Image 1: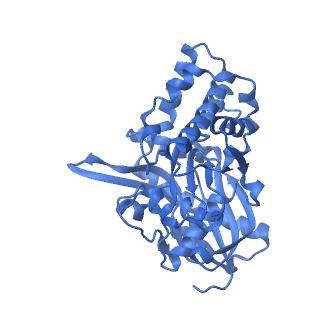
Image 2 (image 1 turned 45 degrees about the vertical axis):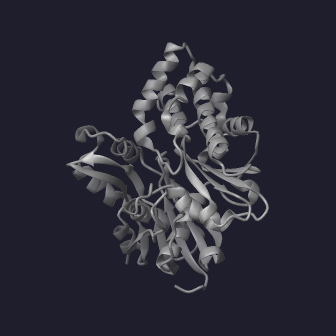
Image 3 (image 1 turned 120 degrees about the horizontal axis):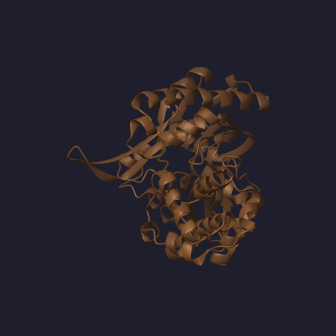
Length: 391
C-alpha cells in the first residue's frame, strides 16, 4: 500500500435487505490523511427469492426448518459472494473502469446473527456475530484482495462489533467548530456523536434502535406486499401518531441502556412487529395511524439517544441512509430534538453510498495494518485491526 490514488470498491448489505450497495471510490492516504472521491454508485436489488430467505435466516430463531439450516447458510454464503461479485462488475462497467484496475474491495457482507453480549451456551459464556457473503468468491472473480468479516475481531476483544462506521465518520465528517450527530437510518438506526475538534477517543456511537425496519414491515403488511417502504413518508402523513401506542413502544428497556450498545433484527423483527400490530388493533388504530406512530417511534428513539447520551449540546444532525428520504421522519426528528436536521446531500455527500464508502475506507486501513475501530462506539477492551484478507 502506498499513498498513491487507487480505485477501490465498498460493498454493503444492510438489515433492510433492500439490496447490495456498491460504490467505486478513488482513495489515497490513511488515517486523518485519508482522501476519498466517489466515482460511481449503484444499488442492486435482491431477487425476491433471495430477500425472502435472507429475512428468514436472519430472523433470530432456532427453528432450522423456518430460519435456515447450516446447509442453507452455507449455500447462501456462496450465493451472496456471487451476487456481490456481480454487483462489483456491474458497477465497474457502469463507471467505465476495468475490474483489472480495482486495487481492493471492502465488503461488510450480510449479518445473519449478532449477539455480542455473552450468553450461556454449552456451559460457557459466548459472544458471537456472523456475516456471510463469501469473500473468496469476490476475490476469485475480481482478481484483487478482498477485506471482509470486520465485526468478529472487535467482538473477540470484548466489543459490540458495531457500529463500525463511526471510525470513518470521524475521518471524513469531523468539524473543528460544530458538535455533530451523524444519524444513520437504515434498518437499524445508529448515531455517531462528534464534539467540535474531538479526538478519536472522544466520539460516542451506538445503535439508537429501529430505523426503517419496523416501518418497512408494517408497509408490507398493510399493502399485502405491494410496498416495502413508506415512500417519502406519504403513507404516514395521512395518519396521526398515537400517544398510547408510542408510550407502549418506548417501554423497551434498550433505550435507557448506556452505550456502548447494539441491537438488530433479533429484537425488532417479525415477532416485534406482530405484537405492535396486535396492540394497534386493540387500540382501534387504522393503518396510517399505525405507520405514523412507528415513524414517531423511530424519531423518539433518536431524540432520547441524543438527549440522554450526547456529551455536549448538538448543533446539527446529519441524517443518512434510506430514512433520510422520508420527510415525515426527518420532521419528527427535528420536532422531537429541537435541532436542525440536514441530509448528507446538504453537506455534499451521498446518503445512499455512505456505508459502502465506509467499508472501502475500513479496508484501506486494514491493508495498511492500522487499527480501524473507535472504542467509544464498540466498547472493546482495546482498539483492533478489523477485517480478514482474501487474496
